[in-house]
Length: 539
View 1 (tube, helix red, strand yellow):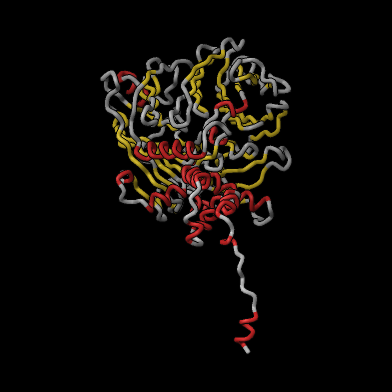
View 2 (cartoon, rainbow, N blue to C red):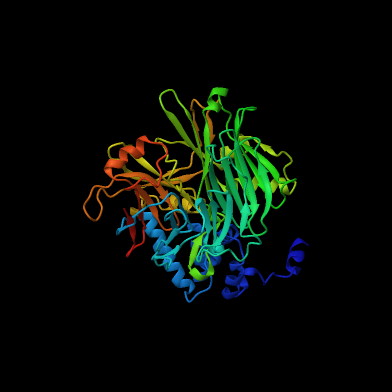
């Protein structure tokens, strides 16, 4: 009876494996990368599908990149360029040198463009070259803005230059390429708060998409204001709890760090600027509890990470690929006074960790908007104690999911080596599968949960976000044979940047806080790991 029933069942002759390979490729191209990886281990047929477009999609994910705009480059051209770039970064080979003089009172590094003030009302822009991504070095100027500016920000994809006027505290919206009023701004001049010129105050400014954030530090407190630069509207104003720093997570979401006495925590609050001002606050992430009130009073906090990780290159650049805006790493630096010196710590947090919790709250999957460290940081972040004093002036240490810091600092010799941290989980898996290969001998992989006990915090801080770290030796001498002294490190999409000062000024730079770009003799050393014809920029 059972045999007869089995024999009467129709035989399944059609399955997905019976589809033509060309159709399978089309289907796989529509999958997200995680699903594609799962499909690749289902069967030998799926694993062995050899398509350049699919392989390029996988290589982009492993590199933390996104595909660029259409051009004459084929998928095969792009994958070869991407693999060559990744190999260059993996081996960290130092290449040629070029001198750039650094002058002026203000500078910015955004999306591979180095901008420097040239006098009180002019700015010089230089696009850094990339052999692998087809970017040539070129320079342009915006002269005679007709006002003296204190600080500026920029976004090449929107042709946007934002500058704060020194005398009347106005925000000017100009074209990055011409210096003319920006055509998309309803009002090219926004009146910011009027401030007493006798007070000691400074600005910190960041922009993303349609929004600008301006943090004003005064003698008596701090004020953080966000504007929609297209409409000129003041969308959000924060002064309690006192904002210490901020960073954009997306074009609409912003993270604001504060120090709170009750409870003794540093907090990271998330705001949606599209919902401001009434329903802007979404949730608050708590960092580990501080030991006592005195520790809190001597604590400082800052959020680093290059905002151009959220930036999509302008189509005119025709780059084959660029760093994915989904792969942004926040570096939250925390410092406090120890018994003998100031102590520095850093929390490395991918924005995906934050956005996962934000999404859960917005969709109703989670109902608590105060999130303790143990619920988000232990598994979604990494806490490290820094063995050096990070620069307060040269602050572009993170780009994408990578972070650079100097190693083995000596006052009379500067940095001899640097350490490059990589928190890309996909590239980490690839590194684990290739341990022992020649190119990986300088890599160290950390995947265990660690507990760091420091005087600042009430309890040991546990964290487990995996990462790999590579070490590179810095060249002792420049191409002209003179000794090089490196005082700080920075990072951008195509460059590892070492800041150098003359031996005379190096001691001043180290002993004075903060050092400024206006000091004569300072300069940038930008080393682009572009093989075989890379360019390094030195002063």
